[in-house]
Amino acid sequence: MKKQNMFWLLLFAVLVAGGLLLFFSRGHGEGTVAVVSVNGEELERIDLSKVRRAYDLDISTEYGHNTVHVENGAISVTQADCPDQICVAQGKLTGSGIPIICMPHRLVIEIEGGDLDA
Image 1: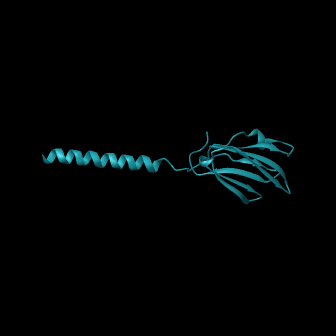
Image 2: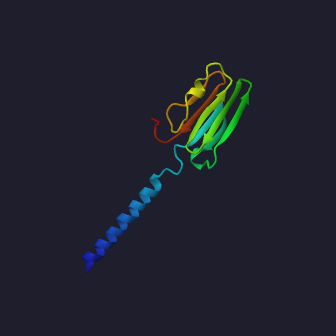
Image 3: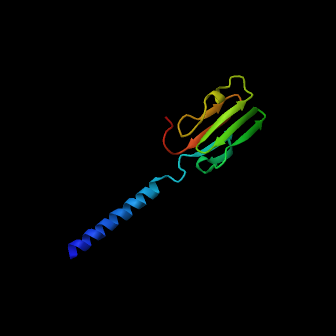
């Protein structure tokens, strides 16, 4: 009878440990916080995992104008009045790694933490 009780107790402990591991390993938004800054000054901090409806963020500074599109899990620059349009051509940013940079406007968009965006 003791062996059977130990088996059930061990099985219960393994299931609880597995459940806790799964719960805490999900990240809870880790790697989905986009930081938008101009000239080194943070303007916005957006948790992309919590975005329910896509929206545009207009950023107008003394350096120029950018339209940033925010959606669940991704952020991108959709319009800019800079001459080279490299920031628009970069497309969507979904994970940490290479940030979106608009050099003429001194705009930087990067995602903190998480896995590298491949």
